[in-house]
Amino acid sequence: MLRNTLAIKHLTSAGKVMAVGHAEEPESLYNNTQLHPQMFPWLFPYGLGGLCNANGYKSIVEKLHKHQLLMYHDKRFQTDQYFPIIAFNQEQIKSSTTGGFLLAEKYSFNDIAQRLLSIDK
Image (cartoon, rainbow, N blue to C red; front, top):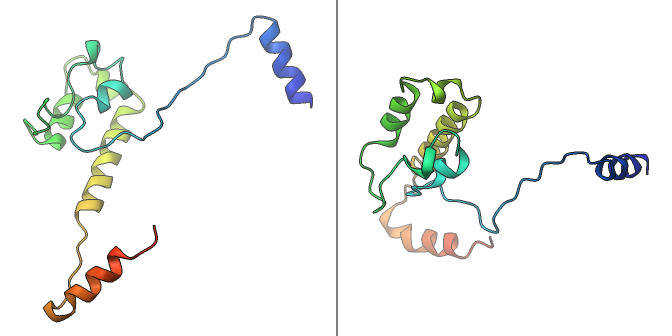
């Protein structure tokens, strides 16, 4: 009850608040040209400079592009407290999801495929 009272007092006395919105669906890490410009508008002026081009094809390898951004002359990408961590965390996520595979004998493949497809998500 005390927290609610303090919050109401803060709001009624012209106190400032910050709200962070989010979309219904999460953003994709893959072939999303606007992911980084949306996450870091202060680093990507005018919403330009995403990590793949408009067709979804990588003009240069994303890892190399991130490295080049971190070496940018004004050091804005290096000095940002979140960009290096998030950029390389996304690299780890991508490498872990694309690095897995399933090995099966040919005679049991159909049975394994059916069991995987019938898993309740």
